[in-house]
Image (cartoon, rainbow, N blue to C red; front, side, top):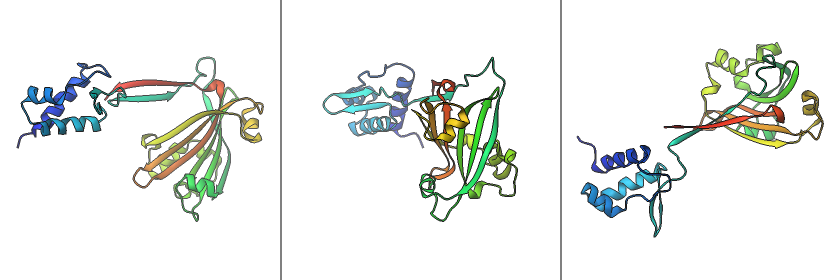
Length: 239
């Protein structure tokens, strides 16, 4: 059985867009032009166009026509946290300051946990050449914490714990992160980072999901990083 005509047209038009025949924002073919070009009915053309609109490649404006999308949804935007201490500094080090078991309602809500559930909060400090630059408050559901382990050093790398104990690679799981510039919210953060109360820090709030379907969260992190150790890079790749 051959490919439906609308899909043949859709694939051809998609290739034209992705291969640079049109610039972003250019006016696209009209329905009548496509009917004539492919010798098909308006119904076939409309179905192909609607699919390309759903994919984000085209946008339609009532009374104006169809245009190639400026949103560039066919390009993947990547960002990475660039370490700024390479060169004159030694490699960074992580120490576990405190491990606490809790069930604060506000945190349970953020982690999509029930009121009767518990989590562990891991307070970790990152330093480089003995200079503190980042504090992590990592919240992990109780079910993903190996309670047989007693040493703080066992939890220096929570990602390694997930791999070793549960076979879960957190780096491969979907996440969302929000970064914003704030002043230290409490004295503990100022003390751990050795900064003044008015010195800004970058607050990084991140949720890593183990299942997007039921919003199951494997790790909820609130981290504070010295502003002069913060640098991110954005890049795009074609998909």
